[in-house]
Amino acid sequence: MILGVETSCDETAVALVTHDGKILANVVSSQADLHARYGGVVPEIASRHHLELLLPVLREALAEARATMDDVGTIGVTVGPGLIGALRVGTAAAKALAWARRLPVVPVDHLHGHVASLYLEPEPLPPPFLCLLASGGHTMLLDVRDESGYVVVGTTLDDAAGEAFDKGARLLGLGYPGGAEIDRLSRDGDPEAFSFPVARVSGHDFSFSGLKTALLYTVRDLPPRELEQRRADLAASYQRAIVRALVERTLAAAESLGADRVAVVGGVAANSELRASLPKAVAAPLPLCTDNAAMIASAARYGEAIQYPHYLALDAYAAA
Ligand code: KG4
Ligand code: ZN
Image (cartoon, rainbow, N blue to C red):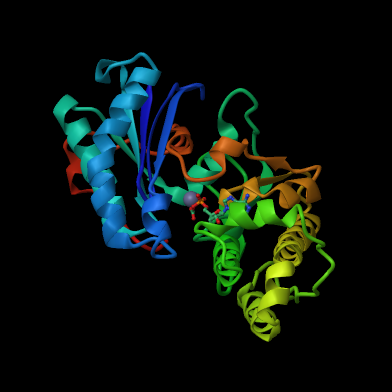
């Protein structure tokens, strides 16, 4: 089986996946509560907690799969993009585990990992397809022709969609991470109550910074009592604008590229309005939308394995 390790942000994750894509264990320990008091992820705190959590999470994954390290044939690990210190904890752990047993290591690109969340059992999606990847760090349209990679056809010019959700949540006085909070609150609000702009940039790119500023001004201009009463309306209208931008851009790209199939992955793919607004698209299963290691082990199946001792020189990278 393949051992997947993911530590690019604030989730410490280890998974065990078979070569044909069955998930045997998928353990994610989120540090979100630890970072919430700071309103966002503090990189140094994330690195330290990865260090503390990685071995317990590995033990839990092995127990869940009723396996031991003897059953592991390959280790797949996220090498970037992400927080460099956090990534280094994961890569160092993967290298040490592999070195001790002379196992090969497959370096995995985190974005390829999100796409590979679609290749797992029980309902793997075979390429080709156009993939909307919307997470806290990235918002991209990817032309996926085979399992080994993707071609970027569009990207955000400023904030990622998840970042827009998180910053919006903060302006509305909701917790961190904000996407799920806005999603929940929006159910009680009127999405047409406020009209927020949907940026139209050229090509297949996205832009969310204007939207965030529009929310900032709206919140600032509302008297405190009204703000309190209309929080759900604000959340619903703001979510509607983000989802509309994602859906419009994705469908336009699908049409211009002649893509028959559309898929959605990444943390924002968990959003209920986005999932409902793209009824024909294949969305990643909910537990595989936000960061996890099953998707990393899945991607490792299609990556290049580095044999001992060459991976000892492997390093992480912060930006793609
Ligand atoms: O993929 P992910 O776990 O991490 C990155 O690679 O960035 O995505 C995290 C992002 C956060 O910005 C979070 O607010 C957002 O996904 N998110 C959501 C929902 N659940 C998580 N955004 C909108 N609606 C949700 N239900
Ligand atoms: Zn991610």
